[in-house]
Amino acid sequence: MSRVLVIFIVLVSVSAVSAAKKGAYDAASTNYKVLSPLGSGQERVQCLARGYCSQKILICPKECPQRKPQMNKKEKACFIDCSSKCEVTCKWRIANCNGYGSLCYDPRFVGGDGTMFYFHGNKDGNFAIVSDENLQINAHFIGTRPAGRTRDFTWVQAFSVMFDTHNLVIAAKKVSSWDDSVDSLVVRWNGEEVEVPTGGEAEWRINLEEREVVVERTDVRNNVRVTVSGIVQMDIKVRPIGKEEDRVHNYQLPEGDVFAHLETQFKFFSLSDLVEGVLGKTYRPGYVSPVKIGVPMPMMGGEDKYQTPSLFSPLCNVCRFQGKPGPGVAKY
Picture 1 (cartoon, rainbow, N blue to C red):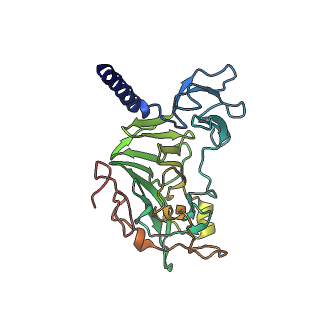
Picture 2: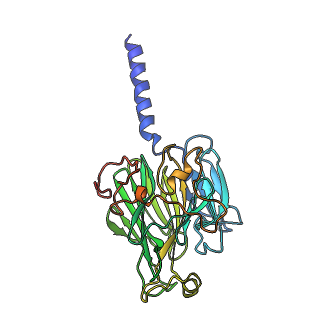
């Protein structure tokens, strides 16, 4: 009887240790250790994920030898996947404004169903782009209304990404004139501004109990990839409204503001079937878009449903976020 009890205790202890380590070594595409590169410059990693790819060494192909090329606009990056796929592929790391989950221009969306639509909101307004049990993404709109117009021209100036008790803000600075050599991107974590390095790995990251948050530069300035592990990935670019664009669209922008805004493409990893939000609801199973197809500017209404009291508020008429109030999530 004593011998059986000892064996049982040992098994329970081993199981508890394994469970404790599961988070650190759980299967994940980016769970790897960077090794020294080959003489050709091709980067290598050793996968730490559990399962088929565990401890295997993956090498970036010659076509895209680096994970984070500095000339991202001209060179594809090496994407390493240490999950069950256990592969390396070459991919662009910039927002595709015609791809699924994109939000660009005078807000033009491409939904999870592939349908393109416009949602204008209003200048200085805040709207729930995605609202789910574990994720809320609000957008702050900037804009202008020339004399004689019945609606605002609007663009997205900032995102507030809320999850658990945390908040990550990605925003474009207000600038009077555009200079490609100046970084016009702002990143705030739980209310505190953080610096994203331009050298080395060119990233800012923080490891939380349940997940990792990474903001990495995908170009020298004004381009980042934001990853909240297990929840969302965002490719973001800051850009201005140029003089020719202003003229063609007759925006009649006021002097002293180039309306720097964000072009973004989202990739989601764990949305529920009841997800809400201007963009979020387009990822529902069986979703049928209500917008009129075939017209030059198919419009999506619903400003009253998705407007939030502030950029940091998870509240709207249809919002579903269940995160707890914390340093980055408002109660109102």
